[in-house]
Amino acid sequence: MVPLIRSPQQVVVVPVDPAKLEVGDIVLARVAGTVYLHLVWSVNLAGKRVQISNNRGHVNGWTSHDRVFGICVAVDGVTRSGAAGKAADSADSA
Image (tube, rainbow, N blue to C red; front, top):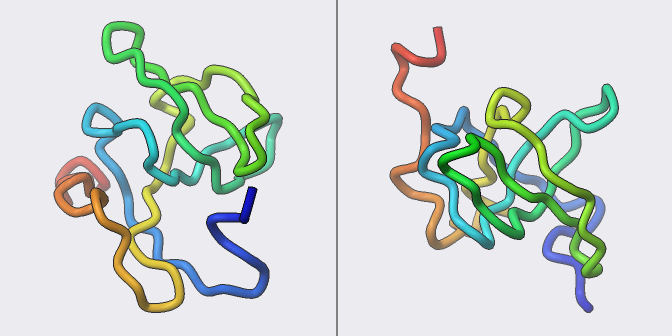
């Protein structure tokens, strides 16, 4: 499987409204004390959590919305489809 983002590609990440996340989104999430970019594999809105995975098909597990900080909106200047409209409102980010 080809990586979605390769080193040293530049990404643009903005604060996210986790309630708007969908399968296939790339998010910035805290896992075991470190912040990584992860692929959203599944969404559980009622439980306020998302299942995250890497780009090689390994599912890392579920993480709560409060550990998801941002969404990747562009890679090397190319806008990621589906990311528009998922940014957190500025009032929510304060």
